[in-house]
Image (cartoon, rainbow, N blue to C red; front, side):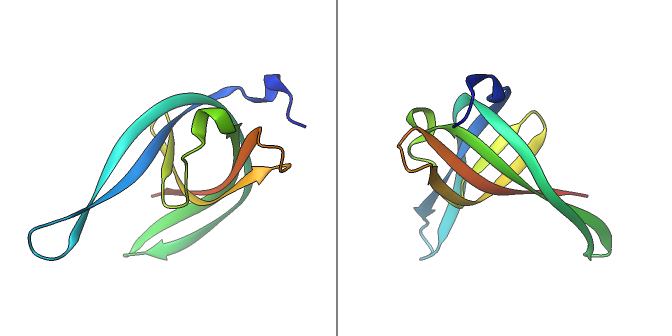
Length: 109
């Protein structure tokens, strides 16, 4: 069970929309959704060299009320201030239809 006081961070839902272009491909548009209360818990982190620059990657668990984010899917994003989280998976936490739990990755250079 998640206590209401644990939902103490404000995150903006950012949805991935793919649109066909005139060249037979597609383009991705990111659309901001609602800003909701969330619980954000860092799980683990690591560093790697990417394109000759050090990049850190932190995995988080983010929980939100399902009613506020029922259309959130993997490939969407969450934003908290200037930080951006790439959604890897979304599950019905506790299988009660109350909360969604997202595994997300945050990348920093």
